Image (tube, rainbow, N blue to C red; front, top):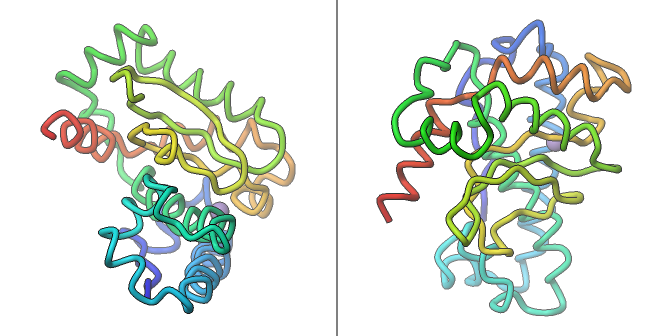
Length: 207
Ligand code: MN
């Protein structure tokens, strides 16, 4: 059984970009909904998650997912994973001082600067058709890359390691920004948790 991961801050801490109301709705309704549906999906395979080594391993190794629950694992297990990472991808405090070291060098080389990386996240997120997520990943070729994926698909099953993700589903911004996804993306760029991105980058490179 999976449990809803608590937020690493209070519901009102991302205001005014994400209102307390929107945060409560997103975490306690949408994220909780994915947890519940995922647990329901795993009912007939109670030892599957432990046998493969947890949610990350399960999503990264689709061949271990029984065919009859594969779509649901990708939708609901994916939905648990994406939201867990999303809460860690944003922060109420300014974390830009943590943008440094090998990660900064890699960003500068790949995108030009942190500004260009943010621009690309906004552009790719804005252009994505329908529901999904925009990601910063380390590809299996060991390159930084921005990509968007549909619905609750994760880069894990394609062999990429995610550093951050931003929710593009309307429920992520509709209460605060109505249909203005681009405005939401612009605003949320000031709240990216670069300390966590940096940590994940180092984690990957320490493997
Ligand atoms: Mn969401």
